[in-house]
Image (cartoon, rainbow, N blue to C red):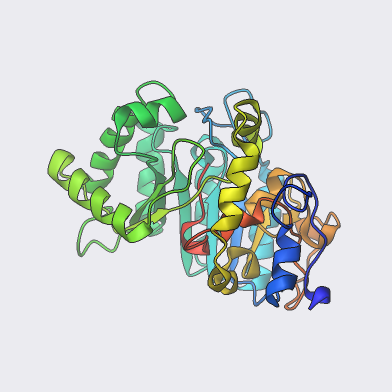
Length: 335
């Protein structure tokens, strides 16, 4: 089974006092982790964001200047046309802040059967938001929106002052456009994550609470909710280390390892493209510049999708994706 697992990099698991590395746990359990058919193209349009969230694995924020160019977008669209992906998943940073986002959506439409945009619900306002939402509706784009907590203070402490109130207003406006409402065909999904160094509650329980509370307090409806653990990378990793919580958090993730989640991991069926066009197994590997196949490959060099059966690059943070219900392509965490 060893040949099915790459060597881990990083610190934390695999140390004498900590849990085994993620690669080691797969070997111990006899679980192979190889790339399956790649059906999802994830596109990171840049690290520029209007928020500077404490949990962000990309350390995105207003000061970041890494933004996908028009040229790279064209190469990504060409790649999508070659590969016949089922889904294109647009993320960031805040993808709404990329000046080419509307053209990217329009150019991808028709090349995939399912388009998704990940939103923090506060990055675009006014005329820009109206133009974007019009484009999203015309192309039947699924919106995956981040709302970490139903508690205003918790959300604002993680994401910034007044973010909760702004997010609620945006969700209401999306409902008015038909998103998340029965029979509209416009899908609105939410993402919830803990606001500290602990794991989230079971997804079914969280979704029920969100559905009841948002409807009762704000008359807001949505289609699905995904509840995930925070990934110990970027700004969240730095916070864990400075607060003295890193080792305990990694141990919690390792203790919650769910072997049944491995088969559905997003890295098995996804390829992630960075803002500068390089390929990664997932957005988390992108955050630590751990490239697909451990060799930098640009999207313009690809004649087709990644090879089925190829190894997947692993590291400490992979425990996050197998804790509890795990991550899937449909609901991978937003920034």
